[in-house]
Image 1 (cartoon, rainbow, N blue to C red):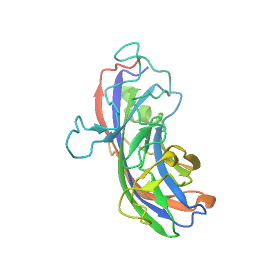
Image 2: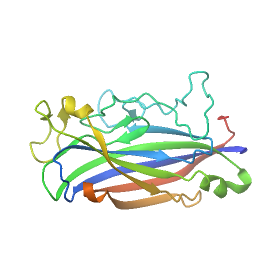
Image 3: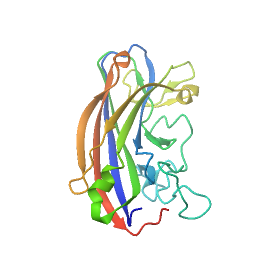
Image 4: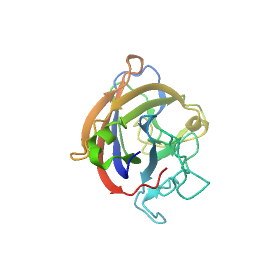
Length: 236
């Protein structure tokens, strides 16, 4: 059992989506989730940074509550190894105009793909805060045992007649959508990135991630992580 609790913050930017040659036109969404080893007691919070504008407070959007640690029995609660607390989340289909939190994962806005070699700027940012127990005498080894990884998912939905473009005009992929199609997405492809986090150096990546051969598309991703706190543990 560790004698300290470490808090590590991950910031993921979904920068730009590249359609190399997707064989299906329609609506797409990219989701990302922070994964940890199920052998350790780790608690993860997912949130979306608040956009500027009137009526926005507390630095988080879409109901993600960075102080809710997942248990209704007490303020701090207990988690089983590898369990991720359930925060107040967005509807299952996600947001059509901005990033959102779905089942503990960050999700980009839903966008339209019509043409080969099409590029869609997303610029969606997702925050993850991970709390884990560590041994103060072996800090680096304790954090390495968490085996952090980032799971990227490509979701697809057919665009039906009730979906409409509410943004910058048809065909650009930059608008937002309304209608049943926004909540009828299915998982098309998954990629996992191993995150080699070092407590002293942090982590800073910027790379394109290519989905599988049958879903020939890529997304440019920026990943930053840092150890932000060491203190007495409150997770049991």
